[in-house]
Length: 148
Image 1 (cartoon, rainbow, N blue to C red):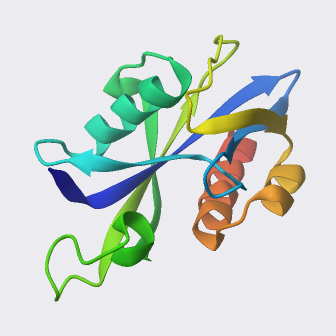
Image 2 (cartoon, helix red, strand yellow):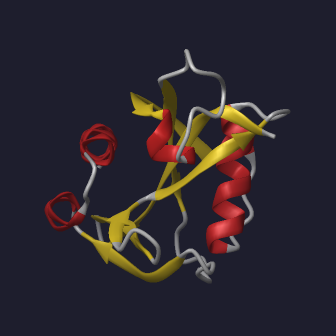
Image 3 (cartoon, rainbow, N blue to C red):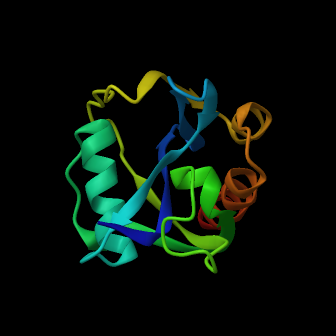
């Protein structure tokens, strides 16, 4: 059964001191966003992030490869599952955010996505639909720019 949380994974790479972010076009919703997916009952958030990354890109990573961001959103449960999956009193579930440097990995899109684009911070921010994605992108970009 599905666990009452969601994960968001931001793939990025650095080329010639330029940070590029991978955003995905979702077939069903027809929107641009990062990798997203729900947890399974026995998983913790980092395990879900690892599994979702592999399912949606075929990239295998260890838990140590991920950066856990402080950004966290609460998402209406009906936006995720379409109903009150975890009972009538569970209105929102948390979305935990992770980032991963995928370097030059060969990404193969899952059937959930139609397209992948590698964009600069401003281009990615302007393409993303959800504010939670934009906030997490800002946090990650700020942290990465401080390292360069």
